[in-house]
Length: 89
Image (cartoon, rainbow, N blue to C red; front, side):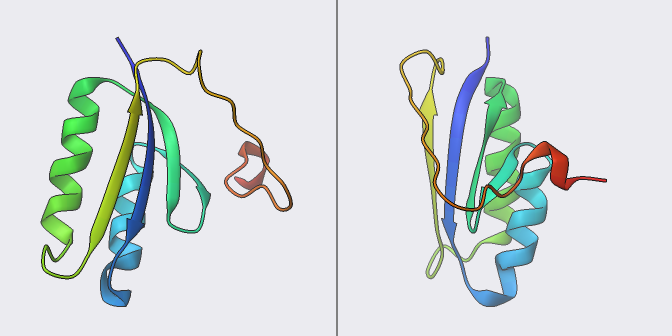
């Protein structure tokens, strides 16, 4: 079983790159502070553990939106599409 996950984060400047680096191990970066992708429940828990080690619970915020399938979700984009596959060399 895989889950479709959207991750949003708002963290202190010193931790931004660390959170992005950890999250990109599991998800695809699509916009500033937003990543998406399909994960197994175990991979989602591993991502949460990695992020929890980085953030400051008193200051930072990380949100996960989780769907069991992309089937009922629509995604629309306008303007620059970040994180597209063609942006990787």
